[in-house]
Length: 506
Ligand code: N01
Image 1 (spheres, helix red, strand yellow):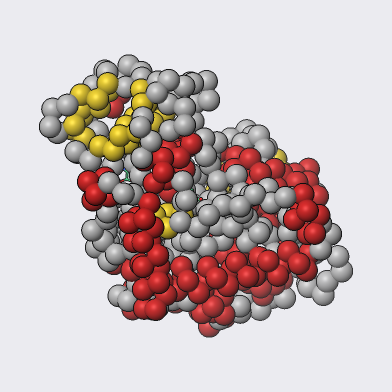
Image 2 (cartoon, protein in one colour; image 1 turned 120 degrees about the vertical axis):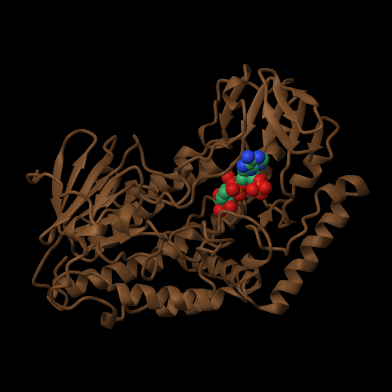
């Protein structure tokens, strides 16, 4: 591609999941030819490659969960199943020539900035030098194991949903599952069909909204094939509804919240007739405080004869099963941990240091924050995709990545035309941005009296508290006043780590 820029940067993208594929496509479109994508696994797909548990699906409508430039007429369900999504990403990566250029089975171990360049060392011992690094490393990929006494003593089969053991058949077995989040509700709906007996260990009930699934017929698909315009219209219709109902409901729109509150409570009332079970499944916090669960099958699954809801607290795990605080031992053959992820482990375990030896652990020692989610002061020419306060929630994370990738490309363009010597947001800009976020949190539903992975260790939501439209508009053009011009002041020694040995370019 011909362009009028003085410089053509070298860029390393870390990760070939949904965002890494997108960045690869966008960088090439921008005429940037020196792009290396490193992927720790053997194929593209990220979270959809990793999560293969029974029932895995996307609870955002499939036609909305696609790249805006590459609709998918082949979706078989309104809420696409994990394998369909994985296959979509593999297809797009192939079509756009991304898979051929990814270096698979090569993780980034070290990533250090010095004098205008990034120096990376990979798990294969290779060394690379780059002008820019884009961490497309995803959000929820470090499985959280519960801290329960005796967890390792269990003699049956035990695994986390993110590392499903497909060698273990559940047919006819006594199965226990800990957790009732978005993942667990999908798993429970599916495995309750075959397990001999399923005990669901619930610590906190969840609000569940029913949006029925739909199978797309061959006629539906044929209508969409070759018609990107129609697919875009369909995607926009879903996005409009989700933004104005679910996103609005959690970010302070009272009318939208009243509607979601009403329909969610009604779903529980209509779906669960037994008052005792209903009471156990009724949360005591606001609808939407924890991520709203979309399922039209969970409540039915909970009422199967072979399913039992256990709300007594777990005391410990024994060799035979789960012991609850009333002294009951629930004997199990298989224990499934649907206990979620560590959401603030962005980019780990990579060893990352920015300018003047500032380590990411030091930079985030007090709080995990960024400027506009993607820029980290002290880490010039480095972008973290889907970083803190991205408007994640019940919306398409692909749409978020597209907005952020355009923002990042505009910043790289500033470097290419020499308007910015390095791209680094100032500490002041970060502080101002985070104060602005904090000011908006009070009216959101996340401060509605619940615990969830949305909250950081201080209890502050790591979310975007305003409307989607406001976010997209503010991300449209970078405010260059928020970036360093010329040489920034050195970072105080107390915040640094010892200097890293010099690496040679690959
Ligand atoms: O994890 P979670 P998840 N003892 O953290 C319980 C995305 N996602 O994997 O509520 C007992 O939500 C914990 O209990 P409590 C989506 O963004 C998307 O389900 O903390 N219980 C909770 O019930 C989602 O939000 C899709 O009291 C313990 C559960 O484990 C995110 O992934 C599908 C415990 C953890 O729930 C995470 O969802 C699936 C303990 N010690 C997931 N520790 C889509 O469809 C934890 N729990 C797009």
